[in-house]
Image 1 (cartoon, rainbow, N blue to C red):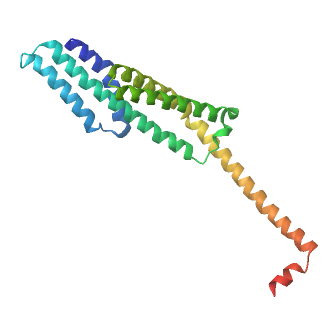
Image 2 (image 1 turned 120 degrees about the horizontal axis):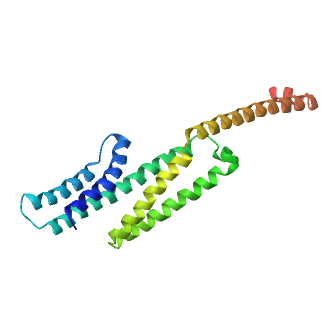
Length: 197
């Protein structure tokens, strides 16, 4: 491996992923910064300490890959938080897209979870390359999921309709209660007088 390949990996993969994590809270977790620091410390050894390029580049690449794996997990964690918030909204998601929204959402979420489990299994087996590929797939699925299902206009519409349905049900319940009480009072006029004594 060459130093240039490490920089290409950093520029094309790591930087993009880290930017997503940083944009979430306007900060980058310290664990990710440690991996970048360690990676560039290995690259420094090529120029300052005169160590051979290939092993230093491989060690740097390894640190960047580990940091990326951590970033993928953070991205999934943040996604799960947003997903939970979506499900906790006072909106009937079954109303969106003629009932297709919720089943599709649940199916796609299961796909993300299943692939993330596979990625973790690869990590457990120390198969970093396979784990990285699976995590990259999870990351892309999360991006697609959020574009498709976190559409605020659809969610706001469902919230309004759900509120309308709740309000209508509440009003119908009150009217039904009043009518029911009137019927009972009419059919059994002495019933309430007896209870009042």
